Image (cartoon, rainbow, N blue to C red; front, side, top):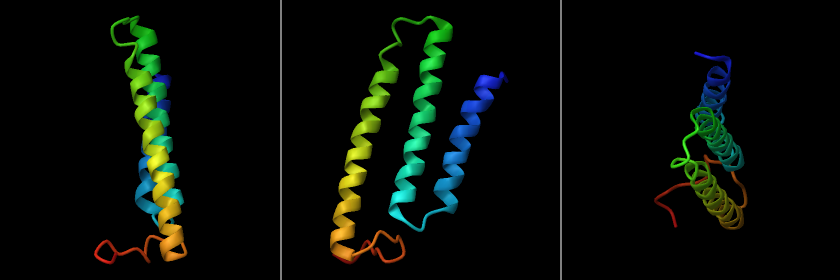
Length: 98
């Protein structure tokens, strides 16, 4: 494994461990998801540049578009839960309660 691949794998794993261990606030969950998407975007961009694949060069931009949509919907959920529950603690949120 090259150092570049190791770096991007480590970035993704650190985002995943942050997602599993720091689930107290919704904002920290959203930041971990964004770091995972950023590491995937950079890895996919480097992969297309290293292999010189012109047919696959649109995939990083498509991933970045989906990441922006995910971030905007996550922030909308954060604002909605902060308004209804008064906090963004994950313990106070119950899926069954409207």
